[in-house]
Each structure stands twice: as C-alpha cells, then as structure tokens.
Image 1 (cartoon, rainbow, N blue to C red):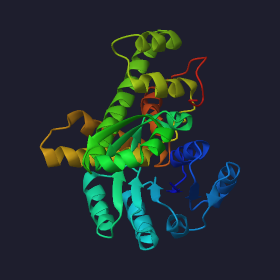
Image 2: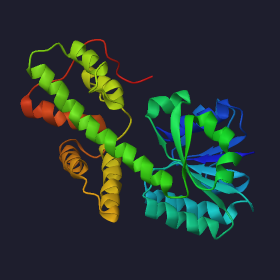
Image 3: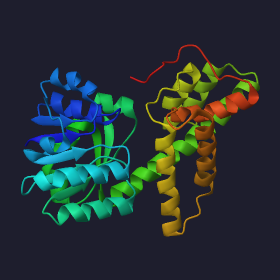
Image 4: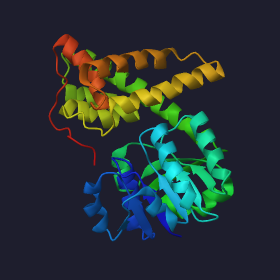
Length: 299
C-alpha cells in the first residue's frame, strides 16, 4: 500500500519518517522545501504540491496546524485521489470540523479515519506515540500496520468524531497539569527545597504526572523546548471549551488555564513554547526554576 504524507512539521515529520523506516512506499509533501533533504536521505519521494503527492496514493495522511489548513489541503487532494483511496487525518481538529470535512471526503467515495496522536514529539520520534483512531473498524484494520509503525499503542475510540474528543481531553489535561506543575515547582523553590530532589520526589509520588516527568525537565533546564506553541495550546483549549458548552460540562480548571495561556501568549507571543507558561510565574516572582542535570530536549 502506497501512502502520501502531507505536513512534515515537528510532529508529522517524525511520523512520516517512521513510515519510511518501516519500509512503506511513501511520497511526502510540505510547503517548506527545506525539509526535502531529510526525506530524500530516507529514500522517500518528494512532491512539490499536495495534489501530486495524493494522486498515486492508496491513502493520504495529513498532519496540519489548523482546521483551516486541513480544509484547504483536502480541497487540493480530493479531485485527484484514486477511487477507493482513504484519507487519514492526524491533525488535532474539533469534532464538528472533523465530521464536516469527513462528509465532504466520503461524498466523493473516499474512506476517512481520524488518527490524532498524543504523548509528545519525542515519542513520535521514537515511533512510540499513542494513536487515537476514530472511524470504521475495517479502516482501522486496513491501516493498522502503518499506524503501528508510527505509534506504540493504538486506541480505536469509536466512530468519526470520537478521537477528536479524546485528543482534546488529553491535551486539556496536559495544559492544566503544566500550569499546576509550575506552581508546585515554584512552591518548592521558594520554600528552600533543592529543585532536582523536589522534582524526583514528586515524580515518585502520588502527585506526579506525565507532564511533570517530561515537560517539567525542560522547565528546570530552562530551554522550555517542547516543540509545541502557545497558539497550538490555545487552539486545543478553545476546542475543549466548545465541548464543555456542547455537553453542558462546566470546565472551571480548563477555563482558568485558558486565561493563563492567553496571558502567556500576550507576554511571549503565539510562537513561544507552551511550556513557557511557567515563565509567567517566574517573571512575576523574579525567581527562575533551574536545576542541574535536566535535558534541553526530550529524546
């Protein structure tokens, strides 16, 4: 089965590379031609435009930064996709956007899977990221080998729209945990604790979280380099708030976290690392959260 992969950013580039290393016939495209040498070195064909990538593929995978970009790319690839081909959307979309775009594709005879991923860019680089699938079970099975090449665990969440919901839930929790972890580390620092030991104690405690164990290290290093921006965090928090209104669930912590990220974007810009949300507290108190022995990037 020949795949096309469109969108080779921080996340998509690793996912596409995992497919290439697993030996899948692959053609890729990104609007940044500077990414071409990486994939040519892996023996992957490069397409100059999205439609060229999609034309001969049995399935087209997209990993793009916003619903608007996903819609624009879908409009480019649908007219040239082969009969019976599938579209696998790995971007983070709201459920309404996913269902609307899926209906457009299905109306032209294209099968649709939504497969957002969660766990962080470092796990994508290792081929161990978690894949959250939504769509028909037969489509999940058809592409299971490719999904397993990109991800360590595959969860079929149910019909289309299900994966969009759980992905937003996981990201909402991550951002809440990130703000909370910054407050916890600052409390330890201002209370006179050694931050390295405090981080280790939290990691071994009931108060630990995936975010503490991963992004907490980047905060203590001072790089904040999680390869995920304030703008992307606010996009996902916006999706969460919309789900809360749709399902009648008060999301008090998510709402407060969204307001904190709005302050973070105002202070540092939308392209700033999402982990820099902790810098708001550091700047407010004039206290850096630094400790020796933590990496600048997660590997």
